[in-house]
Image 1 (cartoon, rainbow, N blue to C red):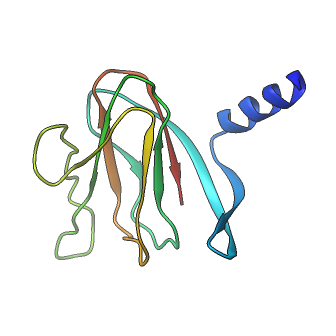
Image 2: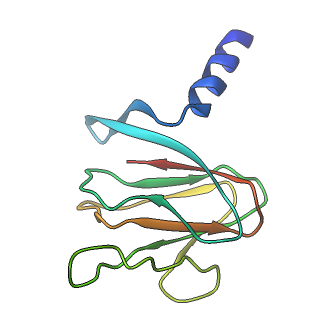
Length: 124
């Protein structure tokens, strides 16, 4: 059992991993990316086409705010910052998550947390 825990922890520590999860009656391949977010808004996902998009805030005490970046006239992300209290951002409380309904947005995603060094998982 101890080796299984070490293996799972090592797998989650990788930059990106693929996982297969059940979505209704279908099996969906997800790319799972653990990130560390802090008190400054930073991009956690670039703009790209994706089939799925979900976030998991694994912190037991800190909230994470994320914002879908808007696009300028030439189709490039504007760099809209996430804000814990401002409009345009959605807040993911401690020990919870959010899954976008389909069709999912292809926007870049910017996130920040209530303190530095908050573990956060992005799944797409």
